[in-house]
Image (spheres, each protein chain N blue to C red):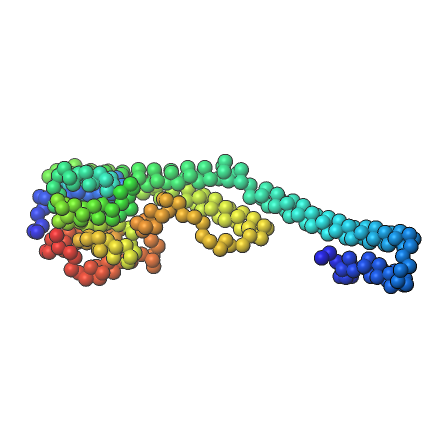
Length: 222
Length: 127
C-alpha cells in the first residue's frame, strides 16, 4: 500500500476524515449536504492518493532513466566496435603469423639438421663448410623468437583490454554470477569427454617418470 | 613379439612438424620403413591396407583422436594385437589411466628425446 511522506497510509487519512464526519452526526440525519461533503472529502483524498502515486512512479522512472543512461555510457566504454573491427582481428592475425613463423623456423632448422646428418664426412673441408652454413641457417631461423615474442605481447595486451572493459561493465551493471553454468556446445562436450585439453602447465602436467610409475615399468606386451 | 627394426611403423599426428621430428628420431634409432597419417581416420585406413609392427600416435587430433583410434584398433580382430604407443602433451594422470584402460602399450609425454622413444619402444617389445 502506498504511504505518505510521514510513512502513514495515504488511504488512512480520508477514511479517518469520513469516520470523524459520520461520527459527528446522529443516526438517521443524513442530508444532501452530508452527501456533498462526503463526496468532497473523497475527491480531495483521491487527489492526495494519486499525487503520491505520481511521485513514486516519477521517482522510479527517473531511476530507470539514470540506469539506462549509465548503461549506455558503459556500453560506449566497452568500445565493442573497436574490439570487433580492430583489436580482435589483429590479435587473430598475430596468432596466425606466430603459427606460420614457428612452423617456418622449425622447418628451416630441421632441414639444416637433416642436411648435416646426410652430409658425407669423407671430404673434411666440404663437410666443415656444410656444417658451418647449416649452423648459420639455424641461428638465423632462431630469430623467430624475437618476432613471435612481440606478437604474443600484442595479443596479451588485447586480452587484458577485454578483461578490463568487461570487468568495468560488469561492475557498472551490477551483474551477479549466474547460478547455472553456460550450456555446453557439442565441440566443448567432445573436448571434455575425450580430455582434449592440450599441453598442461607445469605443476598440472605429470612427468614421464610419473607415467612410467603408472605403467609400473611393465607395459602391456603386444 | 621381438623388436624388428625392419618392421613398418605408422606415426600419427596432425602436425607435420611433429611427424617429421618423430620420423627423424625413428631413423636415428634404426627404423627406416615409416609411414605417416594426420589423424585417426587416415591411420585406421592405412592400418587396414598395410600390416604395421608399431603405431605411434598423438592424442589430440581431429576428426578422430588418438584415444578413439586406439579403441578402434583394440576392437578390430585383425588389428587388436598391434603395439600402440601414445605420444602426447595431454599429460594428466587421468589421461594416462584412460589410455591404459583402452589398451595402450606405452605412453610418452611431449617433449621427448630419442632415448625416451627408444626405451619405450624397447619396453613394449620386452627388451
